[in-house]
Image 1 (cartoon, rainbow, N blue to C red):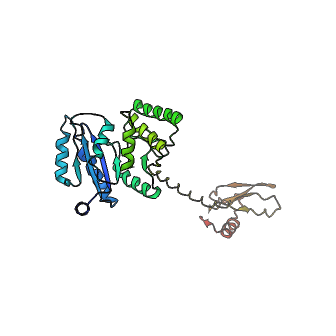
Image 2 (image 1 turned 135 degrees about the horizontal axis):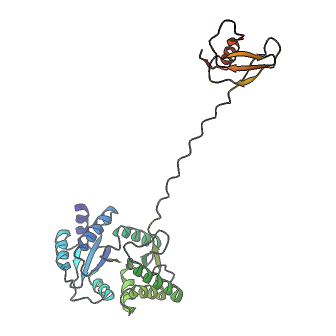
Image 3 (image 1 turned 60 degrees about the vertical axis):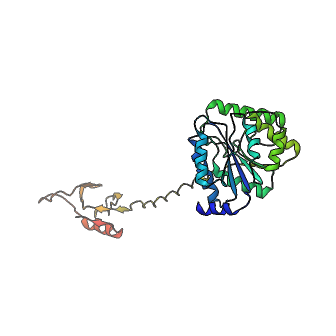
Length: 311
């Protein structure tokens, strides 16, 4: 902050004058002032001045403005008080008499305009050479925060009617966050007759009639969310267990087949009839029983397929 302040002291004339009309902004004024200086310092813009135009606020806004002037210096903050609340248009006329910059930025002190967009206005003006650079709320990524439904509806309806009737070629006519060439703002203000938010609409229409160029700045679109992570490939399915054939009995009877399990136990094959074979859990052999146990066939088939044999 000190480096930016010293650079401004050494510069004879600021390039940008920021007009900040206030009325009962005791709490907001220190915050918006700090944001303006912080954002312009980040953008390495030092040749500017802040002109506070207070309409004799009863809440002590002027006292806060004087303390801020002592903090930042009279060459950075200029006080332009008035006797009473006389309207926004006349506040700009009054502030222009104090402005020394080539360009004038107008904005509200109620935190509805974030100073982080001032460097974007300056960059857009340098890139396009426009006479007026205005913010917009009605293009993609634009918008407002903290407004109730009534205020949003009024702004939408006013902009729609103005677009249909006047065709100014600007999406947001009622906005009051703009950058002007100083002589352009002076010429337009001298021609306007409206007050309130209608003043902002008329000043753009007058500028179009005179032939001044206008550029619009909108907030950058939010970054796209990262793509979802790729689904992990499904592990390859295990091949079906091989089929082990039970060798036919020595008497020529038909052999049965069954899937060979991964852990193979050794059953006992008992001949239940001359033509069939029945599988049973291996019972303890008893003397005289007609059992035909062939564990060697199961062991051979299991080991061929790499299975583990559990006796």
